[in-house]
Amino acid sequence: MPLLVVLTGPIAAGKNTVADALAKRLTDRGKTVVVADVDDVAAMVSTPGAAQAGLWFAAHEAHGALVGQWMRSGVDYVVVVGPIYTEEEQAALTCALPDDAVALWAVIDATVAVTFARAQADPSRGLSREPDFHHAAHRRFRDLLPAIPADHAFNSEEMAAEQIATAIEATIGAL
Image (cartoon, rainbow, N blue to C red; front, side, top):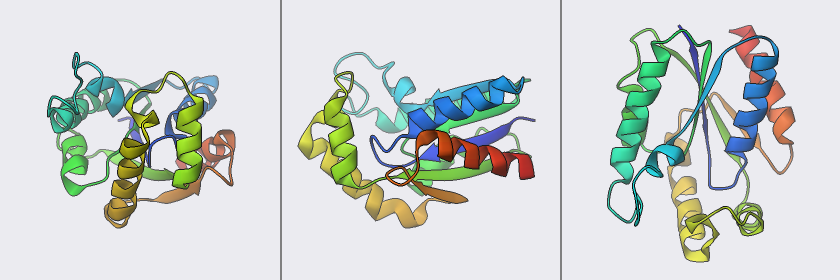
């Protein structure tokens, strides 16, 4: 059974960068890794997009089904990336998992000043570069943070992505 690693946190906190670093570390050890980002599933909705079309939660449900299928495969690790904050979002992720699935939850965090600057510096970002959207999304994360089942929390202002990936890999090795 693969191990599920859930990386969540606010926009531009470094979740994808950590996921990529962790996947590289694990694949360098000969492991198979799937990285499944809820934003990639949401991006499957054509213009105007999942959020604007009122399909954001449907994207979470589709993402959960995809993750559940990967958890039934022969891969070693499934790394989930995305804003999985509320109990409903968590249930959408976990409802399709095998009963004996083991999950490690990590919050990757940074202040809104840092995340907004990162988003502004990345021309590939869309809606997250808009100040009102970015700040509202960050407030939502802060409000819901107590409900996130974090086994670990990392501040990406204090630790580089590679350091966070190393710490997560060490935890995985101890499981």
